[in-house]
Each structure stands twice: as C-alpha cells, then as structure tokens.
Length: 171
Image 1: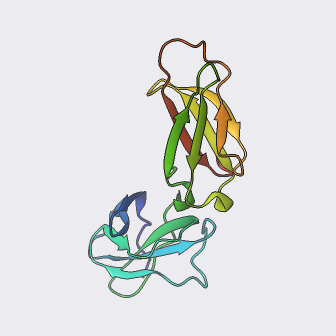
Image 2 (image 1 turned 30 degrees about the horizontal axis):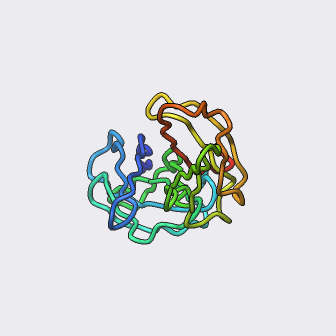
C-alpha cells in the first residue's frame, strides 16, 4: 500500500484565536491530515509529533502559535495509516508583529523625530523605517535597540507619513 501524495499550497493566516492554516489536498480521497510545527523547516517527519492530528478537511487551527519563528508542514494520512511526506514549509514569525506605537515629534525648527515601541525588540533583528504610504521609500534599516529616527531629509514644509516594520534574518 502506497502513502498518499503530500498536500500543497500551505497558507498561514494569523487569526484572533490562533494560526489558521489551509492547503490544497492531494489527489487521493479519503485522507485526513496531520499538522507539524518546528523552529526550522522539516524535510522529514521522522521523530516529529503533530500539533494537530486527524484533521478531516484541508484546514486546521494552531490555538497556541509560537511567539517567535515557526515553520509549519502538513501531511496526508490514508485510512490504513500510510502518511505522506511533508508539504513545503510555511514560515511565520510572530515577533514581527507591528510596533506598539509610532509617534513623531517636531519642536520649532528642529528635525522631525520618529519614536516607536515594539512588544519584543529582543526577538527581532531590527526595523525598516519608510517614508510614505503604499509607494514607500526606505529611510533607514535600524538596529532593534534603536527606537528613534531623526529625519534630516525633511525640508521644513509639507507633511510626512512614516511607516515602520520589524524584520528578522529573512528581511
């Protein structure tokens, strides 16, 4: 008896009640699914314990996602217990959640100073600060210990819009 094919297209969505996962089932019917999570990408399921077992549909919920880096894979299991290899890994890093606050202060003729806070600065590799909305220009790639930026490019007239993102080693 041969194992079913591996699921494909694993997608992760952070929801209010955990990490919601969906995927494309293999061609075989009458399968259920196991979901695995680890701190690195899994190419083999040997020795791994699923966090979700016997999911009847191509969706599952991790009610307790890791706060930092996590990789997820899913496998298909047929009625006789044959388990496929893992799907391709899907990656998430909840340490990259948005900054908690973003403020700009400008006194008299001083340069605008952008300040922010992040819920887990020790768990990230830094910040990218952008000028503008959807078509942003990178102002700086900053160390995680730095939570301020003096905008010396401001001409003194007009308005500025800032956006900041946390980054990890993947960028």
